[in-house]
Image 1 (cartoon, rainbow, N blue to C red):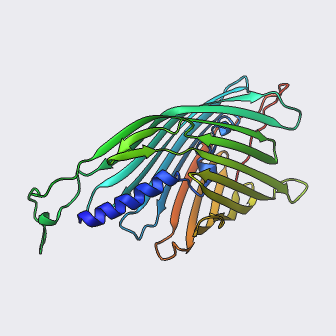
Image 2: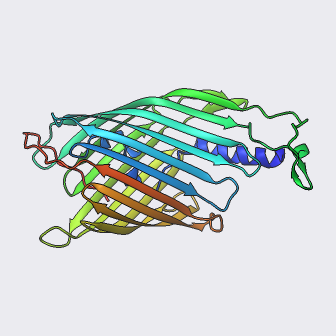
Image 3: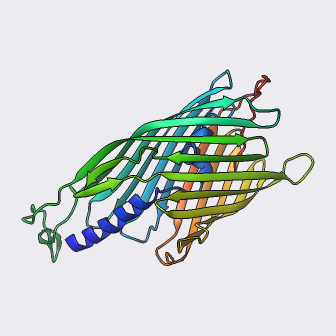
Length: 322
């Protein structure tokens, strides 16, 4: 059991130190992509996403993301927060967790009649923890199952580290297009973990999207988007195309376009929308090196308060995302 646990822990910690975990449905985790998305709804917006990756493995990775952001009456200042919790466990008990919690502030800069530009700063708390309380040891397992007796082996010691985390971003957008860039883990916090130095590498991201109307009434759209991420010398590119009508949307999202990785996915996404409410589901089919380990399931729910935008000099334009 100990050998399996340490192999799992070593591989998983290497993955976590190399890159952040990020969902396929970025529209349900906007503040985790770029804090400058804070306040890009007319008033308030709440989002929740749950993700299960490789469900056939004993070390299933579960992630949850919750955020809320609000655009104030002056249309210039916006405030929000997000919490992301990633957890991976093994069949013999024990788990590894990564928690991020940030408060985001965004300011709308003067631009022109057609474009809005937001700059943002996020600050908050990060935690990495190893829980060993639930681990089963070899001398606790009998021919009939769990003995219920305490182990006589040397127990593995759990660990937890805390750190301050900073992020920043910029976003330019109008009714039909958006382009932005962000940097997370600005201070690259370093802590001792499992007897060695733990480092959270900076994550750089560039992202853009375009909505193309298909009819004069602008009720049918074709949308395309791309997200590029660089972290610890790992380059990742996601891209997709979507079809959208007022109440429904669907598309294909290609995860990890092969640049430096063989762990790619083809993600099929669909969503239903009604008066600010949005329910989305995505299934990621693993291809290449990850084929056979099970795909990825994501469920996203969001609600944006419906309110008429005010006509100020720098009039706010709601950012419509797929």
